[in-house]
Length: 106
Image (cartoon, rainbow, N blue to C red; front, side, top):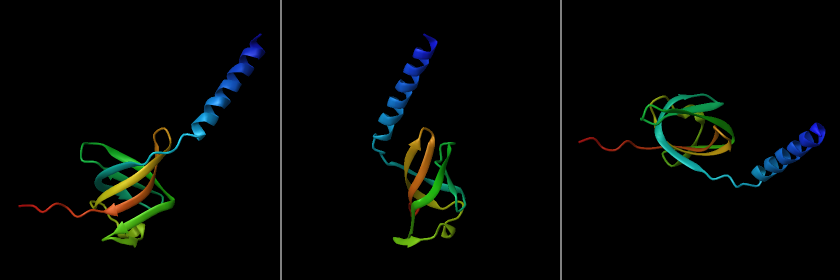
């Protein structure tokens, strides 16, 4: 009886996992300033006390002044707009990191 129950639970888990693979990834957009950046990850300070971590992958594109750029041209404190996708709960991959001009101060 216990073996049958365990087998049923494994089958259910496999069905749920397979269903999750078919869910399309919806991009999420964030604005903020770069807290830290390396060739593997960028952390974004959203200005509300939250710092988010994003992995940099082969899909990540960097844009500065409207042109393609390298990750190393971005620095702590740069204002950016970041497009990402969540590949599993709580883990985000950066898809596009673009510089933003700060609003003019009067």
